[in-house]
Image 1 (cartoon, rainbow, N blue to C red):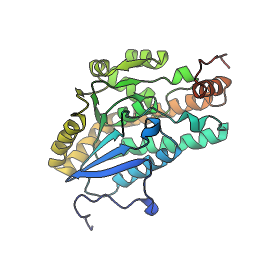
Image 2: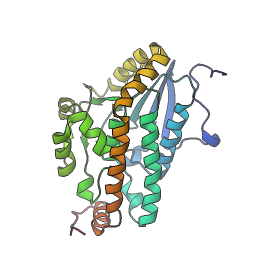
Image 3: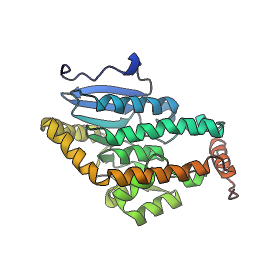
Image 4: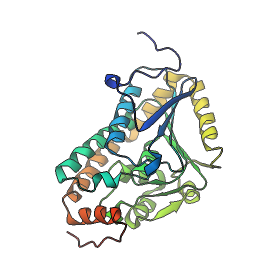
Length: 275
């Protein structure tokens, strides 16, 4: 097998370049991936979904990356799905978009390289789901988090119903998802959603320090540890995700889903009718 040169990420699929992600080699074996749509608080659009899928697939191939740091450009980590893009989608178009996200999330949890989230600001909906899909997360002390999907006529669809209870327990996860309210970084730490709080100025440096410790360890051992720890819950996680998706797709054709997305884009309170 021909090994890559040190600190070189595999070539992008089909020679494509990322437009919504920044990938930087900060040190030997450490890749910093930055969600890069700061003008919309790094909201996830269809391009970002596809690029995240390509990224995790790339990292599953033999390479010299030993740890990944995932963060957001600007003041937010990720505001969730780009609802402006979804405003006028047909049911079939919505389904097509979501299939790409599903594939990206499955590729992310199957990635053999450790992924650490540096939650530098707001992490809502799909943004929080990205952080939860990482192996662990540090957050800036001012960050706010939440799962507001039920306030929009939809529900978590990127493994949120599976990964949030694993992080904070079922009763707390139900409270978060069913109320749709935001919670603080301090609460996220207390509840087990994140591992550590940091000052915003030192967040990335602290996460990089941990990434260096991981990268300094035996890479094959690190991958095998991650594989072994994931194996115990992977079957239940994927089975649970299938149930999540079944429930999610039942909401797509509803009038409440259309009203929720329309109201969000029109900056008004939705009027849900239960149909």
